[in-house]
Amino acid sequence: MQLSIATPRTFSFKRTVISHGWCDLLPFEIDRDRWTLTRALDLSDGPPVTVQITATKRAVRIDSSRTLGKKAIERVLQDVRHMLRLDDDMAVFYQTMEATPDFEWVSEQGAGRLLRAPTVFEDLVKMICTTNCSWSLTRKMVTGLVRNLGRESADGRRTFPTPEAMALMPLKFYVNEVRAGYRAAYLKELAERVASSSLNVEAWLESPLPTAELIKEMKSVKGVGDYAAENVLKLLGRYDGLALDSWTRAKFFEVRNNGRRATDKKIARYYSGFKEWRGLALWCDLTRDWLDLDGRATD
Image (cartoon, rainbow, N blue to C red; front, side):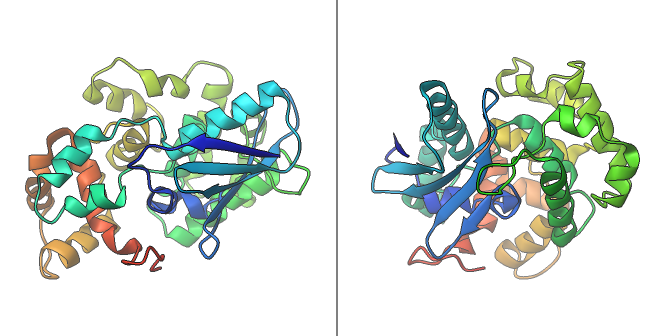
């Protein structure tokens, strides 16, 4: 079954899909040769479905692994729009980039939309799995969660586990199977809070709270500090924070400081002119070389 969604004129499928590491974490799978994004989606009123997402000139095409009913079609279209940020208004951001020397490429190439999961819960769990560890360990933890607890689609792919599925697992599962280390207790507690409705992370998408207050709420989740909170905020559409870590610092030294170390204050000053867009401007700046001039992935 094939579905289609019209895309904004400024949308870049390639830039969005590889905008950050989520495309390499299950349930996402990326084929950089065919430029196909695949994942199993959880349909609450039926079995999961695997979709393959590709780009046409002014649309994204969604190939479903089976025929879907009306309600399931609506859910798939909603999830894909959400993941690819198709409803994000990027006009002011692109105007800012066009007016800034050496940043004009951002609007020209349609960069700036950051791939996200269908749920804030998945984004938050994955972000916790990126803290204080190598990318290979992050992939191992996320793979353990998906393969052990995700619901299975007809083709064998699995969804990201629900909070309820994660909450049911004992702490030793996160220690021994997921290899989450000190994060084990954090993942279990987060799942329990969300499953019991004592914490509604999905409400963060439309939260009326000022960013500083929303960050405080996020940091009430064990395992979430400034780095994780500011990165999750980007996936919610708030770009105030720089979310500096060892990779972004090292990349800034290389790209903007002739390979010399710089303080966090200097990095913050460099992007301060972008105001509420500074976190997104930084990220685009440091990932510019992820695609070459011919639109090929460079990593």
